[in-house]
Image (cartoon, rainbow, N blue to C red; front, top):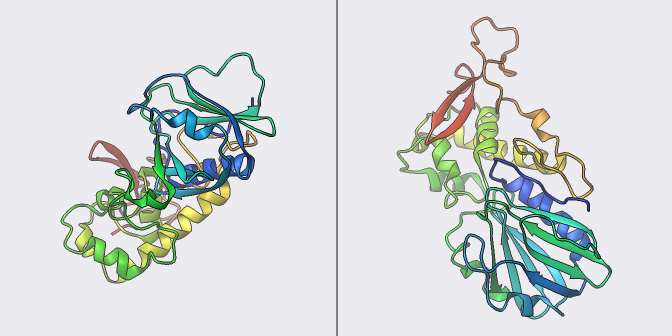
Length: 289
């Protein structure tokens, strides 16, 4: 069976989730679900009692991503909310296998012979139902910040969210109430692109730095989505191809390597790694202020 998504030891961020959603959309949108099975009663939280009954017979009308969550919309007025968690991945292939994939907790089959499974060894992922008309009121989505690639996410919006925040800008950008979907990798990359130190207090960023940061976030995410997403180990796309954006990382995972922003400069000590809130941060102390 061809895998849609595989993740090991890294929380999927916006580009990975977007790529997974597009892979599901390619195979499921417009198709009717003829079979579904929940192979355990819970993941991170209990699965909805009505989940299987809601899925079987419904037609998939569309998909939406909100932050790191995927919403699969059905023609019966319900949406299935999917969160991959730490170790979740979707598997996709022809129906008719005799055995499910190990740790496959939810499976669905379409009227044109395709099968989708939600595999999650650590069970940090989740599946829930929400009325499509009330998606944004779901407890996991209510209060999430703006989508970073939306036109509505502007410099004034970002600066208003950062104003008065006496916390490092790295931590502020990881706050899903400030901006949706950003994670450790892409915050590091965006801050490098913008020339902003991850140690800088968030409230000092509005102004010239804020005007650099917003386009840096948008460009980093756009390039990562175009490349198919990236994770620390074995991310793969719907067709089985690896996500290669990690080859374009400027600082993430490059501790001690020359900073690409100041090649050949003897004053550059290379990319530095520090720990912030228990997570690795990579940056160039010379170019990021």
